[in-house]
Length: 413
Image (cartoon, rainbow, N blue to C red; front, side, top):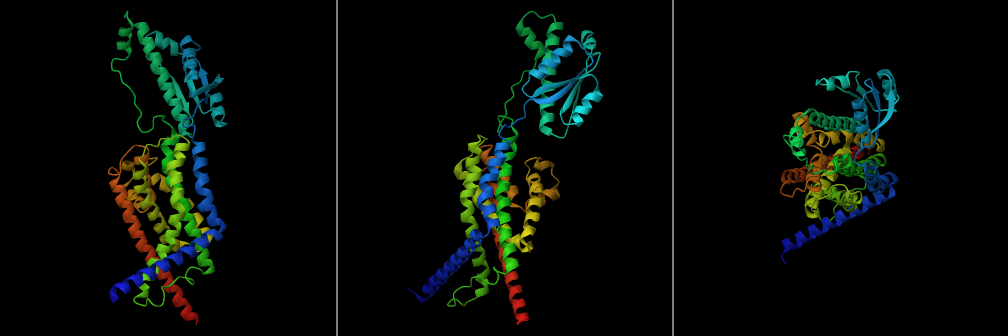
């Protein structure tokens, strides 16, 4: 074996030894810190179960609503009975005035009011258009959806019955053509239950992984900075490898730390994204291989992103304020609760800085919509690009911090 090959093998062995030492030291830090244990080993298994259990009903049922019936007619009572018979509404209160109904809504014992005017039946019998008012509490969007869709469905059914009664048709087929001249069939794709859990949970699961991982990395960085562990005990390369030592110090340090977090979070990520949705029977139709190819770069991007922003963490408490504050805006920016096309371009550009944006989009399209790896190719490329860029920025941050510590030590000496 030539001298150059022996030197290369020696350098590789020395680098692997240094990475192993950094990984071992970082693992010890994780296992000795109760706060990090909470975010790494307690929150990821419990958080998704709690969220899934809360949203497991998917849709709201029997929303309490009040009725103000000024008509007191057979048609108005029929409308009320049909609303109460629906699975989404429960006529809990019969009020004599709108003021009484508003008071119930204000006390949160009722979430809306159906107001039927006194001329309701007269207008229908004269062949005129009648009106019914639906006053809803917009505080809860799911309650509003249940009330609005039920009112529309009941009014449509009554309209059909009124048309048939006023017509001169003789057969059921003629009645069908009269009431439904243009028939349609509603087919719900990707979310067959129309549930809120299947809609919001995939994005929340990815955000839980990012949030807990960033919190744990930030706590370790804050502790190291408070006690001056990380910079003083940085693992150098063996003395035999003296060529350009500063070039390798930062990458080895970042790879070792990243390896520690990656090993811990790889099974947790599989559990959160692949097992939890199936436990609660949410939509999960994605291929395991395709999901893995998206989640691997996502996990690496989050790790290196966390190591980069750890420079902003001076104390342990800082990371909690920083990450928790940003979690809800990141969920909105990901395009889960609001269409990406409707988000301003500058906010879209801001969202590209965070791994959760592409991670949520790729995961939802594969797991909830049945997309293949080729369909989410742009998201995968973006996640790998983030992983590479944030690895470089993490190395720069560590090099700068180490240089600052060395200069401070020289001044004190």
